[in-house]
Each structure stands twice: as C-alpha cells, then as structure tokens.
Image (cartoon, rainbow, N blue to C red; front, side, top):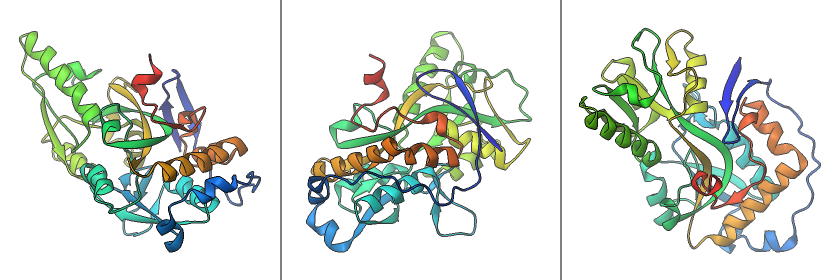
Length: 297
C-alpha cells in the first residue's frame, strides 16, 4: 500500500506505508525543567491531556470500523508527546465544527482531528503546527466527466465538512467564476462528519467530496476502483494541519510545541509519520501560529 502526498514545498512524493513500527528508539533529550513546570496544575493533577477530536480523519486520526480506540498518525504523535510531558492522552469525541467552541468552553485542553491553522482562526485560538496538507476532490471512478479542478464543477454539487472554511472559500470563489462565465453556480453541502459527506457522494447526491488530501488517498486505497482524485492529484488549496489551544493556554501550547519539537529533533516525529505513509508531509520545524498564508509571503 502506498500514499501519494504533496507538501507546500512542492513536488509529489510516493511513500511506502511501513508495517507498524515497534520499539522506537528512545533517544529523546530530556525536556527542560521549566517546560514541565509550565504545564497547568490541574492537568498535572489529573495526569491526562484531554484532546477534542472528530475521529473520522484517516490516516491522521480515526477509529477503525467496530473499534472504539482512536488510531492514526496524530494519535501516535500525541501519545509520544504526552509521554514526554509525563501525561496520558484522553480523546473527547466532537464534530469538526464543535472543536473550537469546545476549546472555548473548556470541554478539552486541545483540539485535533484535522483542524488547520488560518489567520482568521488565530483570532480565537492558538495553534501548534505539525503537518503539511491540502484540500482535494474525490469523485466516483465511474464518473467520466472531465473534472480536473474545482472550476470544472460549475452546475455540479460538492460536499465537505461543516466548518471547513478554508475549503469553502475556494468553492465560493470558483462558484463566482462560474456565474461570471455565464455558467451555473456550484452547489455546496456541508455535513457534520467525513463519513456523512462521503455518503452524499456514494448516493450520487453530489458529484464530488472535498477533503484533506491524505484522507482522500487513504479512502481510495480502502475501496479500490470506487473513487479517484480529480486531476490526478490536484489540490485546490494548501494548509497546515495543527493542534489548537484556547488563548489562555499559552503555557500548555508551548509545552506541547517543545515536546513535539524534541520528537522532530531525535527522529521520532519522522518515523511516526513514515509509519502512516505521510512522511512527505513532515514540517521542517514544529511551529506556533504559522499558517500556509504566512509561509507563502
């Protein structure tokens, strides 16, 4: 099994998905005492870091059919990061659109599950950036229409996750171009979860499902011959998949950033991404509040 993935650095990378890695080398450098000391007292006391997650974002963070345990690349990164902070991870189920409100309501300490860093979202929350990503379009393989970019969807329907503002901005811009060209607008539906959005495609209620590139490639591998990504491996937008934190959790945010950076420094970060076939999406450094828009300036 392989993953095709493209990073903001350009180029298409073919990666072999490795067998689960056992016994990662424990060569981590000790975290500075002040990093551990900065962890909020109530989190230290409970020994658990609560992570809000939609859990429908394979291969990054998801539950396999019939299983309750969360798995994926982000889950492995979070588990290792928490261990370095002497904590454990507890996942809290939340729909994608409820992740930021959940942080603000203190339902969880951080949010994961495919959320992307944007300058608009930074007005409400902070981010620790950990993965290059981008939005692509999945269609049924049986659909023989010439569909290479979002601009080929004039008069057609697409589905995506509720709260996917980065993707929806691209859809709305393309729809305006359709209308200006004298064509019908793009009909867009936003659904609570990735499975809900994909079901709209399976039922042929829409022509395309818009989602994260790694997740769409993974989906295609799970159902050989059923789907294809438009334009080969076209991306309608690029972004940085991140973990989100409430604005009053800067100490926790910085502790998570430093622990994850230590994983990048000793090679654990790359090994865990390689395990899930997304090693080509690795960042050169674990940053704070550095969305794609700032990286491209």
